[in-house]
Image (cartoon, rainbow, N blue to C red; front, side, top):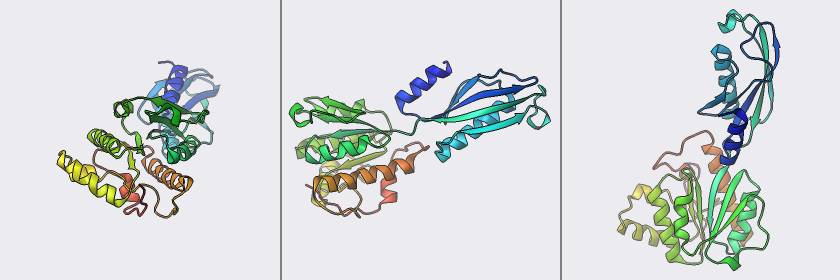
Amino acid sequence: MSWISALAELQERGEPCVLVTIIEERGSTPRNAGSKMVVTAERIYETIGGGHLEYKAMEMAREMLEKRTQDTRLERFSLGASLGQCCGGATVLLFEPMGQPQAQIAVFGAGHVGRALVPLLASLPCKVRWIDSRENEFPEQLPAGVEKVVNEDVVDEVENMPAGSYFIVMTHNHQLDLELTAEILKRNDFAYYGLIGSRTKRVKFEHRLHERGFAPEVVQRMRCPMGLPEVKGKLPMEIAISIAGEVVATYNANFGQDVKKGESTVAKLLPGSRRERG
């Protein structure tokens, strides 16, 4: 894949990368100025000539990805004994971070809290799919980066999200909340699952999910009540700010890491939430 095609695909997926460009060459070098390479946490696209130079460039690019730096970087390399290359020339590389990590979020429910929450999420490095069966509940204007999904059977939309997604359930129907919860927990490959509701709702859901055969450690990954306990209040915007804060804490912790089944980053970050809704 060419470097420009790779950049387009990575941007579409919301995957961060570093574009490495040879901007200066002196003497004998393996590639000419203008040659480019795209580096992600797992792959590279194109080449700047191979050898130890390319290895060092990949190492530096991945260090930038790990540190989440957005600053460009210039590095000069002598292609002699220090790099184990026989070219003998010198080259200057430009490292340009491209994109930010983007959380893939599915918000089920276009009620009052959903209408307060979605614009907040849209202002973050997130891609939001806003899902409801009721067309008339959505506002006329959607924030940029938000995809509206109207589906009579919203449960079908769970499988359309990629692994490592964030799921937020706040529908108008408790039975629908339960069916969505079951489908999400069945996947068990999410980065975050939050369900609006009180401790009483959680206890009822835990009982019903155990009856359906869900293991306790899987059910434990559900955040209900959800949101940062430090953010008080019952107004839709107050609840939305609390939930958005918890999402931010989760994707900051998960950046550069694979989401492992059975692990709950939020549970580690926030061992107890006192927020009660519904």
